[in-house]
Every structure is written in C-alpha cells, then in structure tokens.
Length: 362
Image (cartoon, helix red, strand yellow):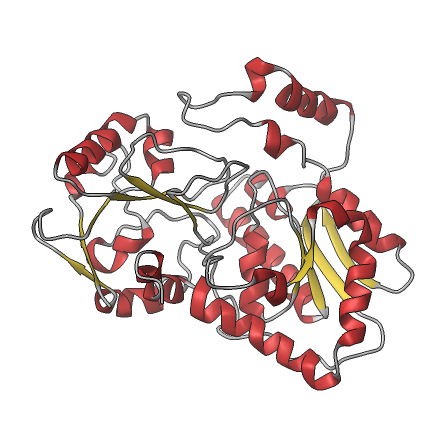
C-alpha cells in the first residue's frame, strides 16, 4: 500500500532547511523540538519509512506532492511565498499537496489543492484538514508497568497550571474580546485566537474539580512554568539537567497513577496526551472539540475516559463511574490497549504506516 509521493528540497524554507517528519527516511534533517531532539522518537520510522512511501523522481509519477518543510517553519522564517509557490506548481500539474503543521495555533494553508495535517483545529474543521499527532518520544521504550486495580481510582497530573491573576485576565480578555488582538496573527494565515484563549484556565478548573471529588485519589504536581521552567536556566547544561529532572518527575507521576489528566494547552491538543498513551496509562480526556488522529477509524470516545465539553464539571464522577465498571482483568487490559493504540496509530511509525488510509479507507 505504498503511496507515491514527490517533493523538491529546493522549496524547503531557506532560512532553516528542515524537513517535515514524513520525509525523514528520504531526506533527514527533521525539524526538532527540545523535547524530541536527540531522542528515539523517529528511530523506527527511519528504518521502515521507505516501505510506506515511494519517493518519485518526477511530479507526474506521484499520487501526492509533499511540502518539504512544515508550514510552521515557513511562517516562523518569513518564507511563506516559497511554500505557496510550490503549492501552485503542484496545482498546475493537477496534484494535491500534503502540508504538515506541527505547532500550537490553528494556522490555515491558503491553497485549494492542499491537504493540511495539523495537531490543532479550534473550530470549523474543513474537509481537507486531518489530525496529526505530536511527535513525542517513547521515553521508557515500552509501557509503564501494569497497575493492579484498587477500589478508588487515582489520577495523576504533572505540568503547567495557569492560575488567574490580573495580568493573565487582561490577556485573556484581549484575546477573546478585542478584534485587533483576537482575529489575526502571522500574516492572516491563522484562525481567530478567541477560541484558544477562552480555555486558558481550563486545567486549573479541572484540577480543582478532581481535588473536590471525594471518590478520587489525586496525585498532582503543579508547575508554574512550562517544563518546570527548564528554558529559564542560564546555561545549556542547566537547561538539559532541568529538563531531565522534569521528565523524570513526570514519568514517576505516570507510573504512580491509574489514570492521567489530559487537558489542552494553548493549542487545541496536548503534547502530554501522546506521552500518556505511550506509557499505557488511560487518559481522563477533557474534550474541547479537538481532533484526534484517525478519528474516521477509531472511536476515541470508547478508547479514552472521555469527558464531553458540556460535562467538564462532572469529570470526577465520570472517572469514578468508569473505574467502577471495570473488573481487575479489564483494568489491566485497558492499559495494554492504550499502549497498543499508541504503537499502531500515534507513534511516527504507526501513523505513517497507516497514512494511506486517509485516501484509501478500508
């Protein structure tokens, strides 16, 4: 089921010649973030990718054209005209162009022949928009040890929780209520910021909801900065050590909890979600009308402990009811299934192994 794809590295962003994840087995030089750089995140896909895609020599031979860099790369580098020129070249040849965007905000790609793969869509999803995982490492090279079922569910969380104060409330008001600050950013390619900033304090509300529920044991490590403030360290070595310490604390929190709270951040998705899935811990997933990969094949409402948008205030009771329905064997199988879903559909290798299904559903 290999897809025939074509790209031209000459159309990568010239400021930072990095390539989208799909092209790593063929071109290398992936666009890395500090949480993925130097990790095992793409190892398996690098070995197997040539079995999933055939890189053609000419555009005419290909089923799809692939934009060589991520859309975020062109936006950040100020080189969007290069990406749009390549999209037009594909359109002139009668080809659709696959575009990957790997960052928080809901940036649109303004070409009618584009197929946009993105982790975050705030609202009004278009037919040409598909969900993309966040590329997170398999930190432990396998699932966390299986937990045995206890009478009461325990839920963990380790990460940034923003608390309302005067300055943050002013920013939230501006982003959600004032047109100049809420409608456009980065050359008018973004959807409105209004939707993302209305959820600014959702994590704090969810944390308090669970703390208040008498039937839930909580295991929360609440931080005031992203990645425990690692990027604020003065030296590179200080940043590295701080990130390592923060990751170990996060993994310990996963290991010591039955479930893990998953709430969106700035973008309408969660990096933490993919780490939780890789560890084999069932997420308590607070839906915000987000998109998840392969939602046309997977019933995510059944795969996760799903908290609908209008039921966030009942998150604790939903978790208690879910846990009570499980036998000890079902509780263990739930953990195995979460890891299985990550391996098959969300890891880079699994995601790209199934990529053809977006166009050839079975």
